[in-house]
Structure formats: structure tokens, C-alpha cells
Image (cartoon, rainbow, N blue to C red; front, side, top):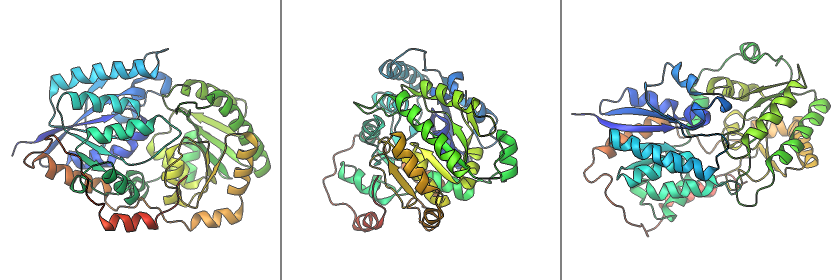
Length: 408
């Protein structure tokens, strides 16, 4: 049996970290051949040039193509246009049998649009989420309507996909790849982690990632970041906490946030350190030992429950996601962030955080994704135009969704 070629697209460090176990299992597939297409922030020195992490990753397949799309001074719309042109040309050259994308970023939206216009079937990981404070929300839902195969991370999101008109047989409830990484990836010891980042982590420290809010009418990202850093400084002194900061993504305003974070960390030697990217192993190791995870990254909401680590989610970027009881949500004003950090760093809240159960545990999530892809790509009629499903949501998903945590 000839193998089918599956183009797998990655544009950011976080997305690649989630895709790693899928790529590993695809490499062992007897009927699918992954073609890894690397784009976006991976290829940009401004955002850490994280393609180097892929190049040195023993689990990664060879990079099939690199598609640079970021240019200094361009708007998001201009970057989307550049990405659409780049992926249109790429898909004309190689004509994969299907395209696998993850998440909700504008680069992935452009790549999915190019695939749809080329008539290529799309499989989508992590559809059905809601993030009302970011433009990613509508990018994600657009990708859902272009895709013919779906891999949501929990029952509430699977249920939403069906309500969006996706047929239940195309929706595979597989759990979260972040949760699988946490359970399966070897972590660095606390001592090795500290040596790696050059910061004494023997005491309490916080892991910090802050991205711009990108929804229409979002506040100024630099003003928000200044308030946030001032809150970190106050809480750090009050609780004896050091701060390990990672860089923002390639959204508009991300470079300004990174400049502020880098300058702030440099002004607090021995108390803070900034990294454009920690890489997935260091990042998860840092999360495991952290006293608190703070900022507005999806990992603070989605992945901290698996560790039982207190988290402070700032602002509206993640509004709409399922929230477990280890996550405190607050506004972006300095006083609100300080109050939330005071609570999160208390012994009572730590006990509460340790007791939570993640709704994203799907077991062998990557294995289930690859198995479904193997079946789908060889099924008659795969990728044919789809209709709009108007039937009921499977009752087991309704029941499971009702048992899961409240939304942010």
C-alpha cells in the first residue's frame, strides 16, 4: 500500500510542542508520511528562531519546507496575505493528500485557507475552543468550517463543533496534547532547570508568559504589560518569588511586550530572567516546579490543571475557555493582578490547586489522532464536499460537558 502524504504545519514554539507526539507517531505509521512545513515565528530571529529547536529534536521528521512570512513593520493582514501566497505555491508544488493544522493563529488560518482553495482535505486539532479576547477566536472557527476532520480536546468543545454543523462522525474527542506531553515527557530536575536558565530556583518562583490581546477594541499591550510587570515586582518582594519570563508570540504588540520584559528582567538580576523561548521540555519542567503560573497564555489555563499548579490568568485573552479551580482570573490593572497573585501564592489556594482534575486527559491523545487520520485518509470519499449537520449532539458529550469546569 502506497503511503499518503500528510502536510503538518507549525508556526510557533507552543504549537510545535503540542505536535511533537503526533509527529513521532506519524513517523512510525505504515501508511502515512508526514511532510513538516515550518513557518511564522519559527523562522524569525525576533521571536527566538525556534526552528533550531526542531532541527535538534530527535523526534522531529526532516523539515520538508520553510516558508518565511514575517516581515518587519507589516500588519497582520499583510502577513496573512504573504502566508496565503506562500502556502498556495507550496501546495501547488507538492500536492499532499491532506493537511494537518493545530489551533487558531492567523498563520494557520492562512495556511488552511490555501489548502481549502487548493481542494486539499484539512484535519484540525483543538477546534471548538473559545477565546473571546483574541482574534484567534474567529480564525479558529473559520478553520473548523474549512476542515473535514476534527480533534477537539474536551467534550464541551466537541459538542460546540457539532452545534456548528460538523457531523459527529468527523469529530474525534481525543483529549489535550498538552496534557499528554505533561504525562509522558521526561522533565528536567529542578537543579538542571536552574542551571539551564541561569537563575537560582531553589526557592519559590513564578513562570510568566504575556501576549497581546488582539480582539477588536483591545487595550494597549504596552500599557497592560507595564501594569503587569509592576504587579510582579510587588508580589515578588512580598512573597519572596523570583520570575522566569518567556516571550510573547508574533501578534501585533508582541515585540513591544518582549522589549519591556527583557528590560525588566535585566534590571532585576538574580530575581528574574527572560527567554524568547524555553522549548517544550524546559517550559513544562518550569511549570512543574513553579509556585504560580501568571500571564495570559493558554497554557496557564489548559496545562496547569494537569500539574495542580496555581495560575493567575490576566485580562480577556483567554475569555471563554474552560477554567479549573486552580485558575484565578483577574483584570489587567496592577492592583487586580497583585490581589490575584497574593491569593494564588497562599497555602490555602495551593491546596485547592493540588486537588483539581484536568478535563483534557484523553489518554493516548496523539495515538488516537494518528489512528483516526490513517482510517480517514484511506476511506472512500474522504475530503468530498461536506454538508451542514443539523442533527443532535451525542448525549455522552452533553453529559461529559455538563460535568466539566466553568468557563473563564
